[in-house]
Image (tube, rainbow, N blue to C red; front, side):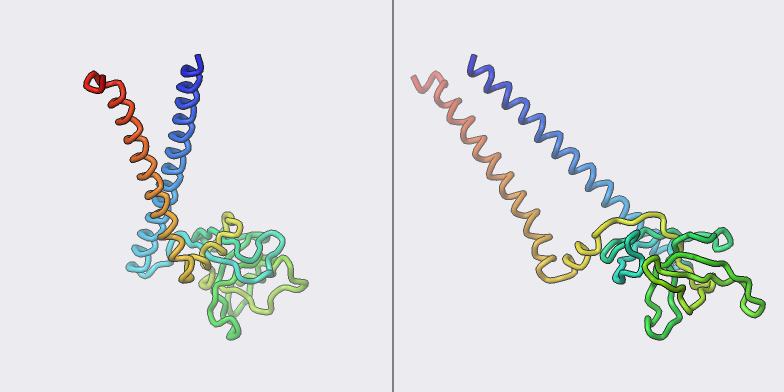
Length: 202
């Protein structure tokens, strides 16, 4: 009876570990597929002299808090600027010498029709009291923010460091090593049981 319970527990544990393993593998495959698509589509766009259809940008300023925080990563999609409207959050290249062409993510608060320049966007950080002095030209708009990934930037900065690279390589290596040791111990235990009940051992 006790042996049946032990076998049942082992089967349940095996099912759980397999489910977790397959789930992790599927998630990693989805993430890998997304990044492959992201890189390839970006390279193709660059070759054609176009803006990539998608972009990931790490937020390093608190100007959009609390909606978008420092170290959040925003997923930006290239859009037809004629379809942009007030309250859309956009990422654009700043022409301000202070930012040096750094991509900025702010919210559109007004769409202007300037006789000399055509359409321009007045933007503002959600945490800022006033709108930006700089007006954004459609040609400087990278795209519209579709969603944010909280705190992913922390991981990005960590992996960019020497320690991060070491951890990224070391952890998978340790996991594989532990799994191999576990399989080896299991094989040894099975072999011992077979040797114990083998007719030659009597």
